[in-house]
Length: 196
Image 1 (cartoon, rainbow, N blue to C red):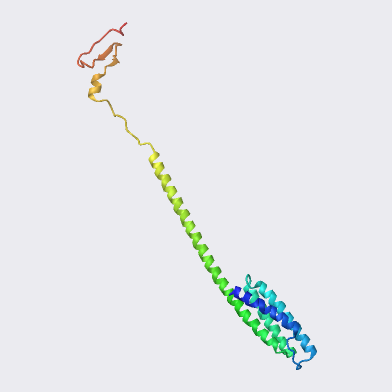
Image 2 (image 1 turned 45 degrees about the vertical axis):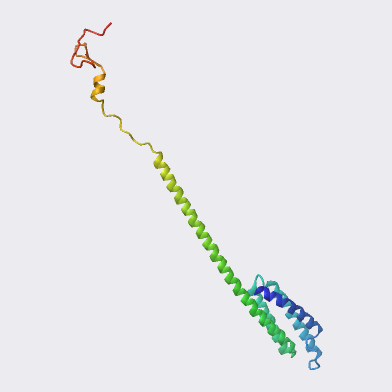
């Protein structure tokens, strides 16, 4: 709608400028002073239209206000100069104002859709980041659990066979050595000292 307003308003503005300088009303029913005043009103409207067309794409609401202002100027010109041609241009100004306002509404709707899409994209990215963080923490926990050493209890004592296969020497109370032989656990030898 904004582009359409620009495309329609540009040639109309040129036509308004040409009409204003060539004479809005060539009839003999108006005086020269009224004719000059009508020309000035037409030129002023054309300048306002140019400003509105400059704003219609990026600031359509401002353009709508400017077109309404141009329409008011045209109506004032009709009342003061009695040149009826200004009434036509005032009506066209109102139509362009409505078109600009519709363009403003369309722009707002488009912006809301873009904002909603951007918000949804940010939410998806946040959830993805949270999921990745949760996966990373779970993986780190599994790695820590797998990396811990498993506690293994040692043998509580030697078995009877191992005890029987070993020879143990223990000093007696009187300084002699008591020897338990692995092959003959029943025999006990006593000596008077360590063998030289």
